[in-house]
Image (cartoon, rainbow, N blue to C red; front, top):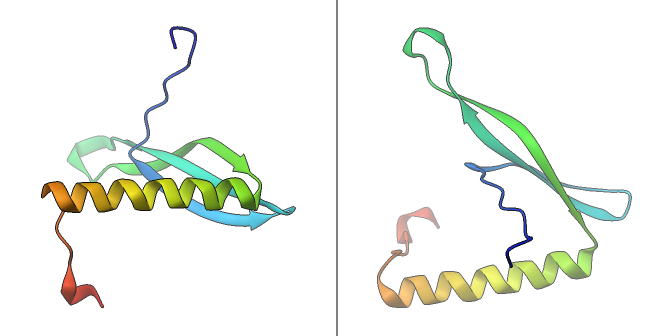
Length: 80
C-alpha cells in the first residue's frame, strides 16, 4: 500500500446522480478571515457506478453497526 494516495476530507458536500453514475463531492473546511466560521470547499470528486455505490453503502453500514456495538457511536432515537 506504499504507492496509494491518501486523501483527507472533512465531509461530503453533495451526493448526486448524473450520467448514470453516483458522484460524491468531498469538502474540506477552509478558514475565513477575522475568526468567522470555516467555509466548506469542494476539492475531490469520486464517481462510481450504482453497483459500486451500493457496495460502498453496505460496507459503511457494516462499519456503523460495529461502531455502535463497540460503543464508539450511539443511536440518536430522537432523530426519527
